[in-house]
Each structure stands twice: as structure tokens, then as C-alpha cells.
Picture 1: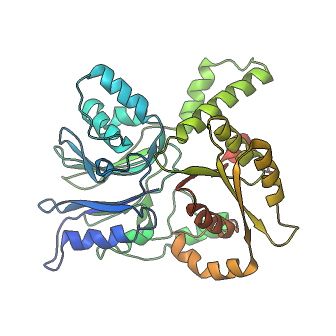
Picture 2: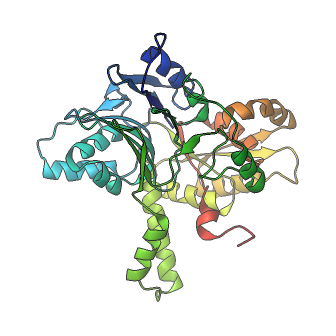
Picture 3: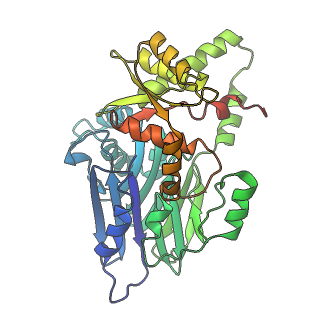
Length: 391
């Protein structure tokens, strides 16, 4: 993952320096993007975009951000991956055979699509996970955009015509124009749910760009103009009106498998090593199976186990690994590991959530990073297919 940050200020004090303001925000996101950092600044407009990069596609400088579009219309700082960006490139090449590409990154693909199709049409074309900060140079507008299901986080704070945004709250707090106050409604929301939903934030006055939402600030009044470019409920209603449910179970199961296989294959496009988290459960086992099906070499798989047999399920993951022929690594979480990790949790997660899986997940991610840069997981399977007991 990468990290984005930035601001658009209405006024500056004599001690303010835009570079000195953006640098600490970007540095706070180094864990999200250890490979490279960059910033773009317009002193006359008092705006800055920053970026920390985890290089996955196009490891050269051609993929560095923030990036300017070829026509000079847009500046983009972006976190995520557009899985169908190669198809978008092919479509652009068909329409404009002489288009000159500088590199192979999906960032450049997005900007080319912005130049050609505009922002709204490009978002309709994009399939992926992302958080974007887009500066429209000609119209002096700032766009904050989040992917359809909100996989990538994006927070923003707007006060007295100052706009500050970032992938994480800790980056916002580095800006002296940001007011850090705990939100009582957010705390109640956490106590009630065990996490904070999209309409609340633990920091008072701070908002989250919602899944499938575009938030636009213009240079006239700096107020937020919000719109939804994609809605899950609207999509389901639309599909239900044109598709028959009379197909057999086997027919529908095959369709689901084909869709999952296509999606997993598209998410395996990478210029760095990748693997999967394998717990031995249905979700992660299915994802790993489809990954191995789409790979000519053994997939690297990782699981975390526990010293106590009653909690340890790593043997199931090892059985699945042997069956699929993956290159498997297991890590054992000791009691001392958990105790030593607890003091770090508040600095790792921006907002509290009451799920003890956060501890083994941190350990597993740290250990996997020694071998790969990207992993696929089975997260979300229960939510999509109704796999929890209460359903």
C-alpha cells in the first residue's frame, strides 16, 4: 500500500513553509510506502500534495508520485491499484494509436484517462481499490475520491477554508492547522459497535470520504460538494432487473467461480513478489487455490499459529498447502509476542476496533514482508456470502 497526504490552505502565517508543512505529514506515512516519497507544491495557491510509495507496478521513476498528466491538466497522488488498467490502456491505444506512454504504472493510466475521458467517466471505468487526491489545474478544484467498497482509507478536515487530507489520522495530526480533539459521538459509536462506522471518526471535525464517493472543493468558497459515483445497492437493483434467478445451483456456482478466478488473476499483476495469507479456512483456501491455478510456480503462503493447541489451526493451513503445492511458511505467536505488541497498537491503527485478530495479523504481516511485498487474503468472504453465525 502507499500513503497520500496534502492540504489546501486559505492563508499562511509568516512562519509557514509549504514544504516544511507537507514533509512531516508524508514522513508519518513511511510505513505505508517505504520505497520512495514525493511532493508537489503550488505556493501561489497554498496547496500541496504528498505521497509515500510502495512500488508494485513500474518500479522505475516513471511511476513516482505525485504525477502530472501528459496534457498538464491534473496532478494525482494516489494509493491503491487499478486491476484493469492494462485494458484501459489498450482502449486508449485503439482510440489514439500515437499516444506516448512514459512508463507502465497504473498511475499514468489513470491520468491519461482523466485527460481523455474526464474524472467522472474514468471512475466508472476503474476496477480496483484506491484513494485519490486529484488537483484540477485549470479549474482550481481539489477532488478526494475513494473506491467503491472503501478498501483504501481517506480522511479529510475542512475548517476556516483550510482543507487537510491523508490516508491516516496520524498524518493529519502533523499539520499545525489541524485541530486534534477526541470526538464524543465517535467514542459512543465505537463502544456500541466495537468499531467506528463510516459516518463517525475518533477525531472531532474530521470526515471520511465514503465508499464510492467524490468530495470536491473549489477555489471560490472551499465548501465540500459530495456525490456518489457508485452505489452497491443501486448496482444490485439494476442487476436484479435484467437477470433471471431461474438458473440452476451448478450454473450459478460456475459463474461465481469464473468471476472469482478472473478477479484473483487480475489482482496478481505485480512487478514484486506476492503471496497469500492462508488460515486453512474456506475463504483463504479458495483464494489461494485460485492463485495457484493462475500461477506456473508455487505460491508463497503464510499462516500464524498459537502455542496453545485449543487455538492453533495452523495444521489445517499446512494440509491445504501440501494439497495445493504452495511454498508455505508458518509462524507461531507466543504470549510474549502479543504482550510486547500491545503498546504499539495505538500507533499502528488510527481508530480503535475491538477485534483481537489485530495482534496476530500484525505479526503475520511483518513476517510475510520478509518474503513478499503483496499478499491476497480471504477477508470479506463472510460478509459477501453470509458466513457468520448470526446470518
